[in-house]
Length: 349
Image 1: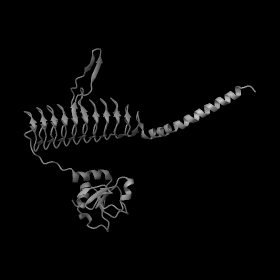
Image 2: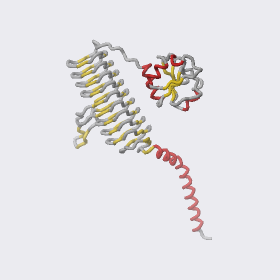
Image 3: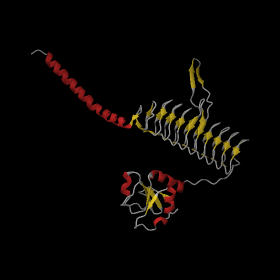
Image 4: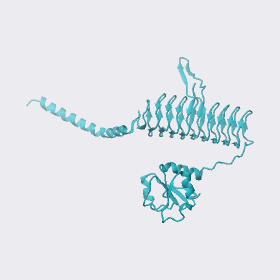
C-alpha cells in the first residue's frame, strides 16, 4: 500500500519533509514498534518514553498526534494516533480466511439456516433451529445451541460455546473456550438446601463485540443479559446474569461483573476489578486495576481502590497510609514523654 493511500484510509494528514525520498508513493507493508521498524514499515508514537527513538527510527513513516519539526521521515498526523495505529494493523494483519463450506466432519442439525459463504470446520456442532448469517466462521469443536441467532461475519473460535437462544450480532468474535449463555449463578437458600432458580433469560450481544478466551457471559434469570455494540471483553472475564453493558466498553482480564449490574457507554474496567451486584456505573467511568465498584458510580471519571473512590482521593490516601508508621512512632514517643512528665510531677521532691 502506498503511503498516500494509507493516509487516506486512516483519515490522517500526510507531511513529507524535503529530505524524504519517494514522498507519498513509498510502499508500506506493515507496522512495527518505533525502535524496531525498518524501511517499508510505519510506526507510531503515543508515549513520551519512546520519543528518544524518533530521531533514529528506520521506519518509512510515523503516526503522530502533532507535527514534529525534528522528524526526518514522513508524518501521518491524527488526533488519536493510537486509534490510527490500531486501524493500520487491521489493514495489514487481519486477513479473513477464505470460505470453505461445511466440513463433512461437522454436525449440522436439521432445520439450521446457513447464510452465504458460511464456513463450519470439522467437529463443530450446530443444534436445531440455529440461524447463521453470511460469512460466519465456526472453528473446530465450537458448539452453537438450539435456536441461536448469529449475525453476518461473526467468528466463533475453537471450543467456544454459544448456548441455546443466545443472539449474536454482526462481526462478533468469540475466542476459544468462551461460554456464552451458560446458566447464571442463582440459588435460593432454605431449610432443605439450595433451590436452583431457573435461568430462563437469554444473552443478547450487539455488533462488533469481542469476547476473549475462557470468558463467560451468563444468560439472564428472567430478563436478558445484554452486551452493547463495540464492547470488548478480555480473557477470563465473568459477566453474571441480567447484566447490562453499554456500547464501546472495555473489560480487562480477570474482571467480574456481578448480577444485574448496569454499565453505561465507554466504561473501562481494568484487570482484577469487580462491580457489585445491582450497581449502576455511568458513562465514561474508568476503574483502575484491582478496583472494587461496590456502589452506584454514575459520575464520569477515574476511580481506584476498594471501595472505589475518585483516583485523586485514592492517591492522597495512599500518601497518608505511607506516613502512618512514622506517625505511629511519633505518637508512641509523645506518649512515653507524657508518661515520664506525669511521673516526674507525681514523684515527691
